[in-house]
Image (cartoon, rainbow, N blue to C red; front, side, top):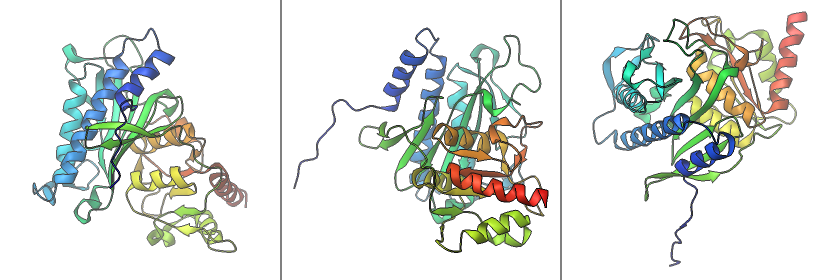
Length: 335
């Protein structure tokens, strides 16, 4: 049996973040570095909880619903608590926006830093009980002013994002991160308990061969979406792939190319995915990787949300594929 080699000089996520700080912000305070370290600790803890969920009886419903009206699973609550506690104790964040909480969470004054963090602690949680891949999503913004926190400080355009990323808890645990200088992927090595750089400078190819959408809602789509999806089944047909966990679907789109769509429907005319902690972080990652993320009206990162849990349609992925869809949408608008 071949002896397994051990890399004695591996690029861990912590080491990578420190190198990025030295390269792009040599005179920085290190607060962002500290914040990203706290986020990776939260993702490691959630990953461990996900792996032990069945044994620790964390499956099932906790008996209440979150602000979105969704049943809260036991793992959701655990993941949310982990994220909140890690971020509070980072001394780098001042305001937290979670999918699970109605209102912003203001960090205690003595612990406040200069960053605002928006996050979905456990995305795709309807898939928890059947062991389908789930994930965590986050975005980091700067506090818009020097003084005390003011109402609306968290409602910023996606163009103000400092860093964003997601963790995918699948066959392995992976963290994908961008601080505005490209996209990099880190696999959690359980033998050393560290995220290790495995996917350097990730890019989304200009065109893919996969479309991803929940076709169960076809009757409730706009005609433009129906026409586009139908066109993907004709001629040199695309493959259809839909997991129902945004992190898993977007990760596949980033790796293999293609298009991920979550359009508005007759029942949800504003779309279903939340702007601040689902659409914007994924749009930031996709644009940094050379892809496109659009609402059908404007780039996702151009949205300035008016409320914390605002929703939006989203179409993201390979540049050519998304632009093909936007052409169909524009054609229907002028018809």
